[in-house]
Amino acid sequence: MNKDQIKGQVEEVKGKVEEAAGVILDDKDMQIKGNIKKNVGKAQSVLGDLKDAINKDD
Image (cartoon, rainbow, N blue to C red; front, side, top):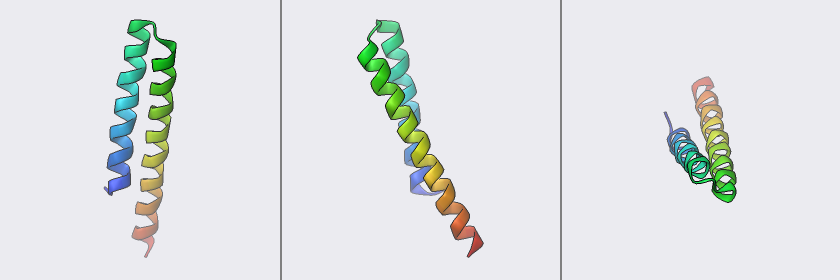
């Protein structure tokens, strides 16, 4: 596991928590920000996966 994968997973979890808190508090802005953070985390994790795959091919 590389640092992009770990950071991505952490951001994804933080986004999920923020999104859930937005649902509970009926705060649409918080839901949207959490959803964005979650998706950015997923993208960073995928980037880490790609870097990992490239390094394994070397």
